[in-house]
Amino acid sequence: MPFPSLPSTFQRAMRWWIALRWRLSRSVFSVPLPLLTVEFGVKLGDLIVLIPAISYLVTATALRAKDHDIKGSGAAPSITMMLVFLFAIRNNSVLLVATGIPFERVLFYHKLFAFVTIILTALHGLAYLLEKADSGDSDDLHHDQMVSGMVAFTGMVVMYMLSLNVIRRRFFEVFIRLHWVLFIVVVIFTVIHGASLVLVGLIPWVIDTFFRVGYRLYIHANGSLFKKKRAQNAQNPSESHHKPRRGVIARDQFTICAMPGNITRISFPRVRYDTGESFKYEAGQYVFICVPKISLLGWHPFTISSSPHEVLVTIHIKALGDWTKKLLAAVPLTSDGSHHVVPAPFPILVDGPYGSVSIDIENQTAYSHVALFSGGIGITPMQAIANQLFFDFHHRGRQALKKVHFVWAVRERSMVEAMMNAEFAEDRKLLQGHTPAYLPDDLLSVDPNGGSTSPDDVFKAEFYLTRGQPDPENPIDRHLQHCMRYNTRPDVADVLKSLGQDAQKHGKKRVAVLVCGPSALVRDVINQAMKLERTSKIKYDVHTECFDF
Image 1 (tube, one colour):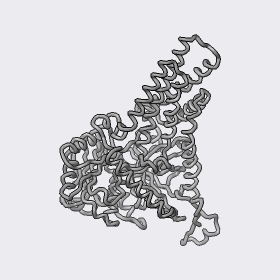
Image 2 (tube, helix red, strand yellow):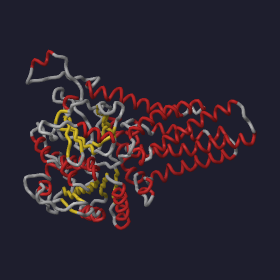
Image 3 (cartoon, one colour):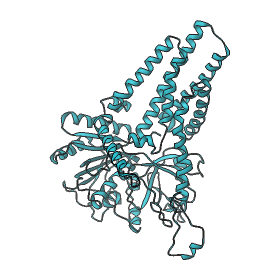
Image 4 (cartoon, one colour):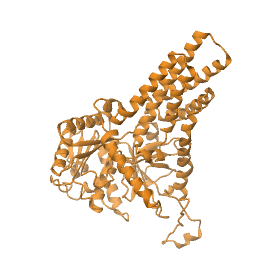
């Protein structure tokens, strides 16, 4: 992470802190645990720090409620609610940068402290009831406090219920709108109740919201506040008489296309054609997208499927819910009634990028062996990371990289056709500054075998079509015959064991493992990694992607 404008002493301190952060993460805080990590997302760091702290708060509050201590039992829920707001930050804030906590873990802590707050608030309410039952007190002050507390508590419970996967995934628009409404209700009645401490947690949240809505969207539309570039158009000098066009993301440079497998592909230039400003991001990050034509207030998270060196920033969106289905239906047909790449006929707003990978893959010497597992549309972050590693190896001298094994399990052939689209790969070759990516360019090479598949190859890809048979007439099967596997699932243990053995041959002790997909795949990867660690001298550092926003 560069700090070009900061004093050298501060730069050294930050580099030291970041290095220490990664060491602590690998050795303590991100270490998975049998059962707890797979079923509940709890890791060793949580077991050491969070679980004891939460247990203390719950026990202390329960004892105070038992003693009818209304004021004392209200302290803990005020603290945990403040933490709920603190962990609601979604951009790369000071909290995330300083601690190194990836956004997926911040989201986990946001949910965890929300649940704990509900438990503690219930105990606090019990103290009111016990006190009233003993004293028979019915003064107006206690009555008003009980009413405000009950309204806030009800709002918390409803918010939490709506955030459950089974509800949120099916009714995302309803979830988002009610989440905002209930959030306001909870804050107002919590303050009325007397727990003004929660407002402290709102300060970074307000700063975060202002940064996203007030600053970042402005920059994307208008360019840097501190260094504006005047638009230059060498092909049409007459444009210089018009008002300069600025901004990182040009709304008139978006393209959109409906792909096989009910996938919508959105693209825009990483570097604006007319201003030269760049959209900067890292492999594995995501953005929030809003299409006002579909929903004015609806912002939905999607992973960027391209890598930072690519000419186009690309996002693949699977039509799973109401909003994504409406987006797919809004993609216009061409004159012959088919879907092709067309300029976006409606405004598309982008907020981001956000998130970070919890494994230090940016460090060229941290890992020599990398496993990338994905299931279904979970390929998007893994594709971006694979392409970044491929670029680093071939163009940045990352020779420390010895093996990268890319595994994708997918049900429908149509999704493979969408993600490994030959037409898109050919179109990108015509763009200035294009460099071939591993996926799909290298795999769709002229050689029908997709290039060498020697054991000495650094990069290896396997696509598992779990519900399909070979189709020699299908172009995608012919192009990818070297890496397609039919009617079977990946052997996660075999992939990890093979990488671990090769790492040992090269004198390495760690393997980076990244997975994004269905919960069954994520659990399998975590379980197999922990089993192999018990029987070998290799440590498997596992990163799991989370789409549960």
